[in-house]
Amino acid sequence: MVGAEPPTPVHNSTSSRDDADVPHALRIAAAWCWRLIVIGIVFWALLKLVGTISIVIIPLAVALLLSALLAPAVGWLLRARLPRSLATAVVLVTGLAAVIGTLTLVVNEFIKGVPELTAKSTQGLQQIQDWLKTGPLHLSDNDLDRYIEETQQWVNNNTERFTSGALSTAATLAEVLTGTVLVLFATFFFLRDGNMIWRFLVRLLPVAARWKVDDAGRAAWATLVAYVRATVLVAFIDAVGIGIFLVIFDIPFAFPLAALVFLGAFIPIVGATLSGGVAVLVALVDSGPVTALIILGVVIGVQQVEGHVLQPLIMGRAVAIHPLAVIIGLAAGVVLAGITGALVAVPIIAVLNTAVRRLAARRVPDTPPDAVVVASRAP
Image (tube, one colour):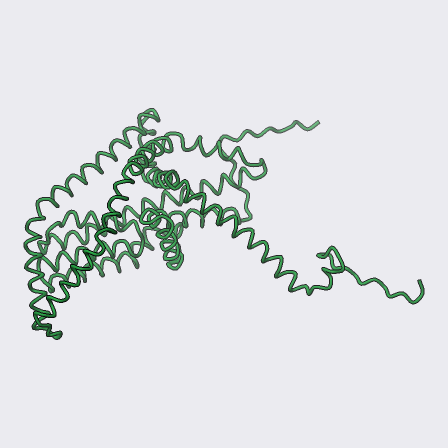
């Protein structure tokens, strides 16, 4: 028609004139927003699901860590021509015996040293009271009595809370036992049939994605094995280094404190420091402030050696994670699952880091050893 305005061209990313009237930047921002909202909803639903079945998820995560730790030993026995089931059972039973024996030694030494430490604790408290009177605070007997009375009143007012916490802890004893049994069974089957279980899961995926996912999964498993083995070695070095000085200065509970440092080292950055702080407190009560300061220097020195020498040297670049990611992961793990969450947070980050890098890499995965290649004969 003569005089009619030509139609306004519609952008390829729009489907109507209304969309064309919206600025391009705003349309892009809106598209990002609703996609992020969908991702957030899915992530929230996954967290709710994990929280609901945490009694199953947490034991399986612990079983994976134990499997990564014990898998090399099973491999050695398999190369010695032992049947797979027997090799797995031998490694698992040996590991349980080592854990039970260590716990027995720790408990026995703790029981032997409690009376002496209790007596020295009383002397330490008396010294603290004397320092509060004669030190820079110059507190009188009335002030001390008032503070002690307020402390006792606070404890009495919160007795119900402490009792309910103890009752809730006793109520979860069945869950702890159930989780322990699940960890043992899952570890056994992960060690014996882990490769078969993984291949079954990969076959559930579309054919085009199987090789890439299999490559990423095996690389992630290698990262987990390297992380667990390196963490055990670093924890052992920390425990031996601090334990030697505890023995030299004749600090009570040297072996239990060294075992505590070993377990605490499995929580990166903060674990060994907190467990070393317990050793410093015991040294303060037992031997006074000078020895406690020496032990504190030892703990700080060991942590510096760990952070600047052991971690880079032993962990290597395969499992290198930025400290900020470690701190955020630990915080999220504590919020979601307490101590267990802090234990598994960093391994999960390391595994995901490797898996995502492999999936995003533009490379052709190696041909699986069990792949069957069928070639047609040219006519």
